[in-house]
Length: 71
Image (cartoon, rainbow, N blue to C red; front, side):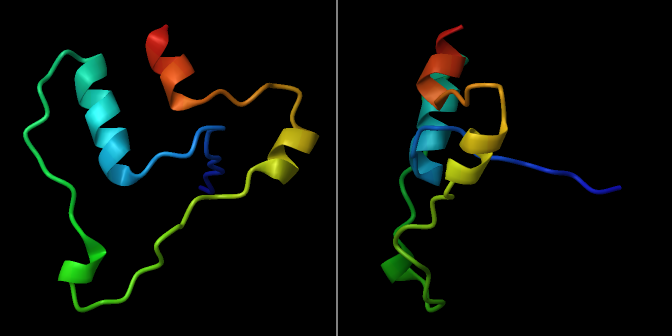
């Protein structure tokens, strides 16, 4: 089975995602950001997804994380 995923309209790091999600569920986050410089494997500093094609094709407006969690 193939799964098609798409990102939302708001750019957030994995750390920011975790913080926002924890707070949305009224959980005090108890973790710190992991810095890529601390690991031997090189990683890109920005790996956000370009959703412009999806925005042009879809009839549904892609919402940002803050907007979704506010509901």
